Length: 301
Image (cartoon, rainbow, N blue to C red; front, side):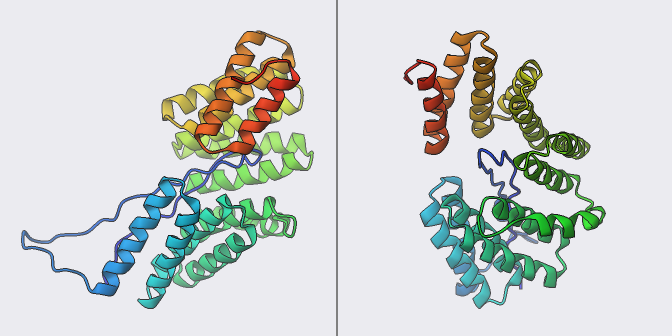
C-alpha cells in the first residue's frame, strides 16, 4: 500500500532546560504522469489527514490538541495495519506527552514505537526511539536510564548516523553531569560535539557547545564559560533557533553575574531571556531568570 512518508523528529537540547525541537518533513507523493491522481481510499485519506494535522499542532506547540491528534493518527494507521506510520505517530505522541509532563504515558508510547520499529527492522528509527526513552527516563522519579545506557553503548557502532551517535553521547554526558561526574561529562560532551561535527549537524554542534558552557559555569570556570556561551549564542543566532538563543542569553547573563562582570549587560541579557522564555511559553524557565534578577536587585521588566 502506498502511504505518505513522515519523518520522526530528532530531539536535541539541554536536559536542565528541557527544550525540544521537532524536525518534520511534509508528505511526499509520487506522480508518474500528467493524469490527475486518483483519490486515495477514504481510510487512507483519513490517516494522512490525521498525520498532517498532528504535525501542524506540534509545530504550533498546541500540546493537548497534538496529543489527541497523534493518538488518532496512531489509531488510523493501526486500522490500516500500517505499522510504519503507527510507530511514527506513537513516537511523536510520546514527544507531545512529554511537553505535558505525562512521562509515564510518554514512556509507554515510546516503548511501543521501539517495539514496532524493531519488528520492522527500522534500525535508525529504533535508535531515535531509544534516545527519546533515555530523555524521558532521566526526568522521571520511577525510572532511571542507567540500564538503557549500559545496553545501548556497546551497540553504538551499529549506528552509521553520526548525529544519532552524537545524541547518545550528549544524553550520557547530561546524565553524568546530573550525578556530579564532571570530568567524565566534559569528555563525553566533547565526544558528542565531535560526532555532530562529523555529521555536519550545526544544531547538534551548537547544543553540545551550550551544554559544555553550562557545565563550565557550574564548575566555576567562569571566564571559559563566558567564551563558550558566546560561541553557542552566535551559532543559535545563525540557525535562527529561538530556544537556543533564549538559553544562551540566560547562560551568558548568569555567568556574567556570577563573575561580577559587566552587570548592565548581564541584567539586559537576563531580562531578554526571561521575555523570550515567556514568548516561547516556557514559564518555568522565565521564572528562574526573573528570580535570579530579583535576588540581584533588578526587577524584571
